[in-house]
Image (cartoon, helix red, strand yellow):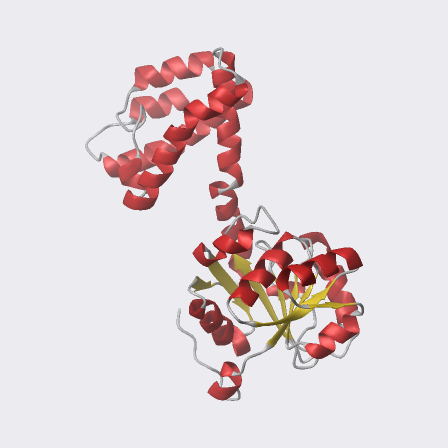
Length: 296
C-alpha cells in the first residue's frame, strides 16, 4: 500500500529529523531505544514512574533520564509509550492534560490500535501504533536482532510516510495496516509464536510419557522443529506438509487418537482438520473423506 503525503504536509517537514523520547523503560523501551540509537536516530532519553528503570535505560542508550514527564514531552517530537498494554490508556489520559499540540504519540502494542489515544485530534496531536513483529525476550540483547523484524504501522495519515521511510531506512520491512485489523494481526503473531511453545510443551509431555527425561525430550524434538520451520520459510506451507495427514494415512491417525487423551486429543483433532485443508491443496487427487469422518 503506497501512501500520498497530504497536501498540507510538505515533503521537507516529513524529512526533518525528529527528537524521540520514551515513556516507560521495560524490554520494548530498552530494545527499540537502543536500536534507534545504534542507527543514529535522535533519541533524547527516558521517563518512567520507576526512576531506577529510566536511569538504567538512559545509561544503556547513552541518553538522558527525565525526572518529570512534562520535560520529556517538551523536549521531544515523537513520544513512544513503551508501557504495558494494560496501562496505555491510563498514561495517555495523563498526557492529554499536558501541552502536546503537534506531538507524535506512539505505542508498541501488537493488539491495540492507535484509536486507544482517545480525543487525540482535539489535542492537535497525532497517534500511531508501531509494532515489531518480533519476540523481545531480553532488554539488553534483543535490539541486536531488531533489524530482522517487520514493523507494522497504523495511525494518522499525516506521518505514516515518515515512519515507513524511517524504518525502511534502517533496513526493516514495513507494512501499513488498518486499525480494525490489529486484533487479527496480533492473533496471527500468537499462532506463530506463543502457540508454538504450547505445541512444544505437548510434544515434550508425550515423550516424557514414553520414558524420556524432560530435557532429553526437548533435545530429541529440536531437529524436527528446526527443520520444519526452515522448510516452511524456504518452501511455503503447502510444500512443507508431510506426515500421516499429507499421505491420507487414516490408520495411523486412528492409532494416534486411541492413545491420546483430554486436551491433547482435542488439539490433535482440531489441528489435523486444518492440515486436511492444506493436504487437499497439495494432493488434489486424494479423497480425505474417511479421515474427516475419523476426526469429526
